[in-house]
Image (cartoon, rainbow, N blue to C red; front, side):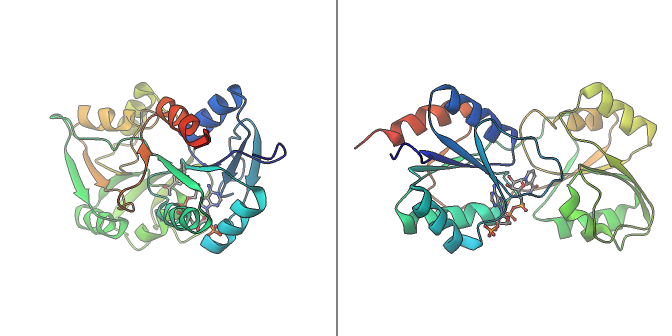
Length: 252
Ligand code: NAP
């Protein structure tokens, strides 16, 4: 590795990506983290950070070559499917090693009332059918899919206010996780929620809403994860990613 160049490029935007950056920097690995630039005040990882898209897979190939990156760790959110596809393709083209770090999906427990759907459009169809008082936790980019539904009232929890169309009856709640079971119980009770909509993001930071919904018998519409490319070199824990990165950085 050249001393002025990052050994590892972390594609981030998640808590796992920040934890990995901290762990690798601690070990003296030269790391650059990349963020898409979607939120106005992102939580920044330690170490070098760049912000903004690369300009598709070709732009990412150029970045990998210009910066002499040795390993790409794709620690992006399980629903950020495009950057994962781009990273897999760019690493193959540039001959750079690729590692996927993705937290496991949530699985329903016996007390949960889940309706699983393949995508956000299917989730919106269920909401349109059910009506009622909906807690929408899908993130800002997906709110527009629910904009035509006027038979439901929405509590829309987002980090930044959406700049897209919104359903006619709603309240915006700006906040950022992690959330506690107590606060989720309070929100669901105070707003008399009878339907929760969530992506199957996985991980502990936003999981308490599932328990809070189960306790009140609230139905949860769970959007399944998009499919990832087959055969990825993948781990689900930060500690395993650290071990794997060490192996990948070792000269052959
Ligand atoms: P996406 O649809 O997979 O990616 C769209 C485009 O955004 C990519 O083609 C790429 O632009 C750029 N991009 C995405 N992640 C990037 C990164 N880490 N560094 C540089 N460019 C990136 O992604 P998304 O769903 O909009 O998510 C954007 C970011 O937010 C991701 O990094 C993800 O980890 C984080 N996030 C997403 C969600 C979610 O539910 N989707 C939730 C929490 C956090 P170019 O093609 O120009 O390179």
